[in-house]
Amino acid sequence: MRLMRSTVIVSASVIVSLATGGSAQQPDAMPYTMTADVTYAIVDGRELGLDVYMPSGVENPPLLVWIHGGRWLHRAKEDTNTLALTEEGFAIASVDFRLSVDAPFPAQIHDIKAAIRFLRANAETYGYDAGRIAVHGRSSGGHLAALVGVTNGVDKLEGELGSYPDVSSDVQAAVSYFGASNLTTIMDQSTPFGVNLRGPALALLLGGPLESTTELARLASPVFHVDPNDPPLLLLHGDQDPQMPINQAHELHGVYKAHGLPVQFEVVHGAKHGTPEFFDAERTALVAAFLKAHLH
Picture 1 (cartoon, one colour):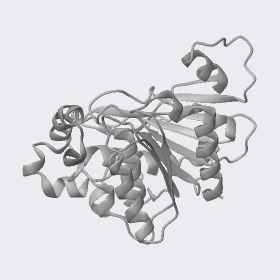
Picture 2 (picture 1 turned 90 degrees about the vertical axis):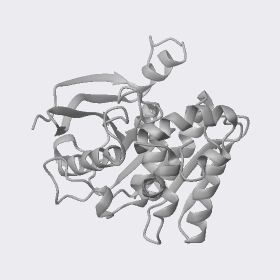
Picture 3 (picture 1 turned 120 degrees about the horizontal axis):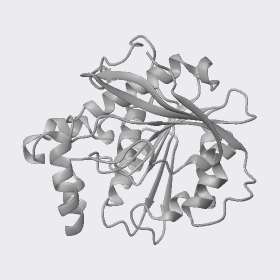
Picture 4 (picture 1 turned 180 degrees about the vertical axis):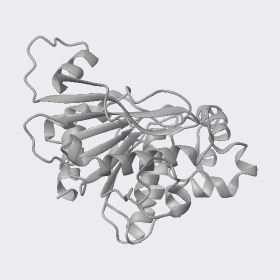
């Protein structure tokens, strides 16, 4: 299996500056090394890939697996919002997975867990710590990140992809940016705009309308998997989100608290869905502090 195609050195501050319309002439951040288009599994002749970002000058850093958003049906690994975390000493692996237009659930979670097994098995190749792996994602990727976090050791969601079936896909922490947690309640909690947006996306993900896919919706819902052995969780959600009801975060936060698990809930006041403040310096520092506290 191919491990890499290309490696480039760029600066995290350049990425952030360009994304915000600023100048990239004098980067002052620690550069990272990017290894692009690493194949972690092959499904029906299709290569599934990931990109690895290693912070320069950091020995054996923790690894953060990034899961992009896009209502489960579009976008790709290049849509990475948290590269500034490399400046905090974290390695990042951004993962492609089968979208719902290609395969219904649980294909997405099978792919991501296969990617984690691959990444853990190849930790020495890239130089991060195989024992300190967290998962984080935004929107639909936040839902998948939370689901990965609460399904350590759940065989039904493990899948059989890749070359490392005996390697653990467990993660040591999870971060969900404005993601779903209970697909059986999301529609009742949604605004009319959210219903129109999420209804078709959920039907595509589950292979049918919610009323006829209840058991699969439960399987895909993090709140139904929480147990006392689950890893620390950070939730970030805007209280003005018209697409993903904040009650989804409240539900998962409540279940975590009921189990006595470490959980942090950052309500971003005035924020809508995916607005820039989720990835500003303040929230980047908050996420970094949470991860440093739990990936030790």
